[in-house]
Image 1: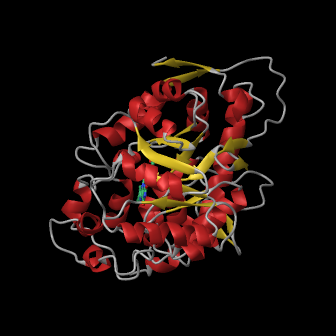
Image 2: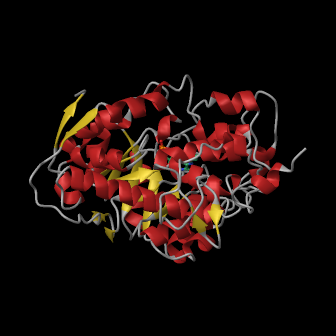
Image 3: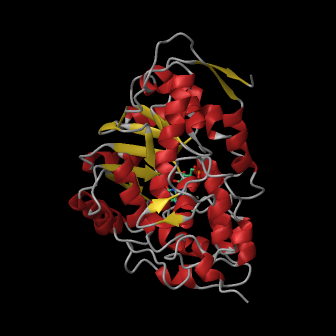
Length: 407
Ligand SMILES: Cc1cc2nc3c(=O)[nH]c(=O)nc-3n(C[C@H](O)[C@H](O)[C@H](O)COP(=O)(O)O)c2cc1C
């Protein structure tokens, strides 16, 4: 039997790839210089032939990953109604393009909390990136730096925040509220000392949503992946595979504090000298309250459909949140963003920018750091096309576009 490991486009990947699962990209373009028709194939030192779209990285990752890792990343909670609603809500947003705008080469630059960035995009905080590829968090953070966008390092990263921040570029730290407030203070102090330029507190995980794929798979972390920022944080629990139990849910149940409250957010605001973003807001009343507390941004998000199943698609509530918050703070969107058109939709609905989640993990799985770099370059190209097709000189202009919901 052939050694499939040698057929993986990325020799550094710990997982074999069956070439039969890879969809050819079509004939190579004349003069493209790559001479290869298989997307995801590494070419030379860090070269990578991307698939046709950001969303297409899913197929490459699915072919490269063990089924239970694919499920952990792709899955949502419960019946995955909210997971599906995220796409449905974005697809319902029709954008009215402007014509005769005289736009030649649009700029993709945009303001996000803390500065101007190359794109109105940040890499969403995502746990355990070494599950996807040995390059892990450092690989994805390096890709974010190359693309000129912020990288958000998760509390549950499989690489210490100090090592991620050392990559350079703009790194924000994502905070999960832990039962031990001393550990919270310690983590925030470590992130700031490491040079993190923003703090994003996630408020939609009092407990982990019931992710049935992980329960059915008895999903547990493999030995080479651990919560590197939480020494002494009951990491053993995340590694204990038990049929019918998600070890990751057991672990977070032991360390996360369910009763996070507005008083805790005020406590955090007082101690945070860098931009503070609150992730996981859906109700406009919560958005207003967070803004009044002085946060710099709210992220309208349902955690990619991984928390409350039955919550609305995040794009469906974005306009109401934008209207309620007004100029008090920035509003970002995540959950379901799969390409440049979705970024345009979010901007047209009034967002300052988006976080992109799973597609970047898929790109990491397909090609490590080079795959992630290719994915962000593709997203930039898709956004440039969307801007010029809608007659916008830049993302700020896109926020003036009209939309038709369900159009
Ligand atoms: C595998 C995985 C791990 C995640 N880990 C975290 C995390 O550690 N902290 C957090 O705030 N959100 C986490 N999220 C949610 C993302 O930040 C983001 O809200 C979501 O992925 C956006 O939806 P999308 O994947 O459809 O783009 C995770 C999502 C995935 C898919």
